[in-house]
Length: 299
Image 1 (cartoon, rainbow, N blue to C red):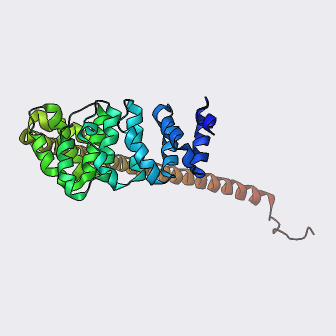
Image 2: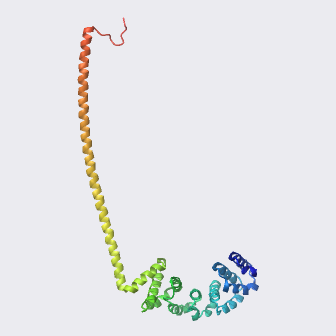
Image 3: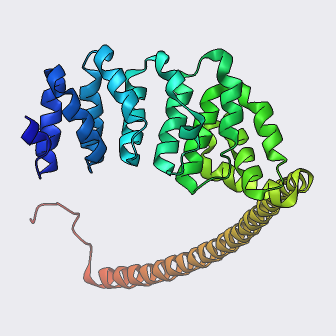
């Protein structure tokens, strides 16, 4: 099993870590901790931490505590991650300011998350003050991790963020303001909160509010203008349709009149022709003698 945990194929290492966790063996504690420090695959590392949680905390916690002081950044980061998985609040005392301020972003991010998970209620304010010192640090992912950690502390962070929002450093002020927005509306998204925060820091709260109001007003005017244009278009179309309908009706009436006249003229011509034909037939019949009745026997 030790060889499988160090195999070249990551899928083999993953299956080995799963097997160790499914059948906990205290004899593999040291191997699991050592593999956490060097394992390159994220999913295998996570499975190794899970396997450690399956062992008795009485033997696991003291070994992980030693790993928190390792010179290897991954060893420290994964040890912190494993503590968050175990969730034993007695480990809170092991989370130092140096960890929360670690120069390695991954170690610091993990320390923030673990600290928030383990902190006693009466120490939340002190933790909020400490985490606020990191506002403005790092790239988007680092700042998002810190904002989430602060938001997880709840309302206790509001006074801290209010002070940080007035910080003369634009990056700190914007990050603090974005965290406030995220606290008030978690569904708004971090990127939208950062954008709004940077605008507020750049313009100032009053100018930013005025700009927002102007944008809303402009949007309302645009909507009204669009509605008026739509109504005008509909009115024009209806007028055109009415005119077209009137024209069509007039044409139909003209055609009907012409058709009636043609019909009358044709009927008159036909009637005249029939009269002439009948007269001619009568004249012929008069000279030829009485005609037989239709159906009369030939006798």
